[in-house]
Image 1 (tube, rainbow, N blue to C red):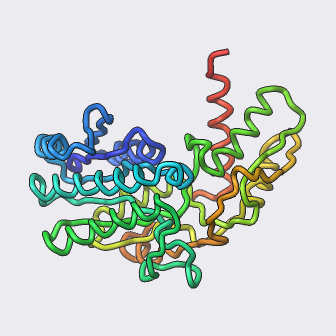
Image 2: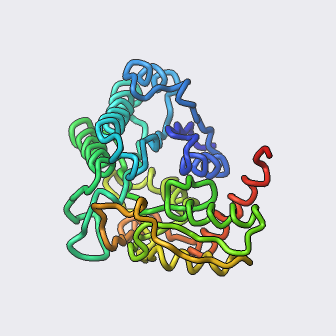
Length: 303
């Protein structure tokens, strides 16, 4: 059986899917709650890692909302880099042979000068969240260079799927539809931000499959991306074919970001060469499964 794997942020959206994937692969998985492992406490983090002695460490814990990072930029910048620092330092001091994956973000590239974006593109963060992920990424590179830790830094572009919060575009589109269905409406007004913003979406189950493979790749940085971009307008059109009720699409000014990037899509050729990873789940299924998640959640909610 593969050695123990520690997953931080295991109760989060991607974390839950990663735990399922690793357990399916036969790993013993350590999935501590925030009460069991306070990553902002360096001493507690060190003790936990020393006691657990993991062979693999997947660091997914983060304040992950771009929008919310604008509301509390200091918190996003401090906590995301502090958690990454404490994890890396704990591994350095008590489990130096462990392999570490730092789950980063395609947001670090900001407004790219050319598409698709590869790992050699300049880092131009356009939000406090993105800046915090740049800091964590650079810390990972530092610990790999100076202390020879086995650190893989992934930069995942937008991921979506069942269980995602409605803070994110596919989550909010599918939740609005499911709520209208549950209320017996014949039509739903789906409100989104900029309908022409185009992003590279990968199903979360493909993303965690990439993580499970990438942690054993040579240390370095790897994009996790589909290579295709879809606009918000296109997402609504896909969702239109997955419900019996009518959809009217409106732009909600409150959801439009003042500092946004028109189009982002990445290239994951480096990861594919190193691991053989390829995304398997089409965007249509991602939306269908996200919609079905909200339908089940609403049926299960107390009246």
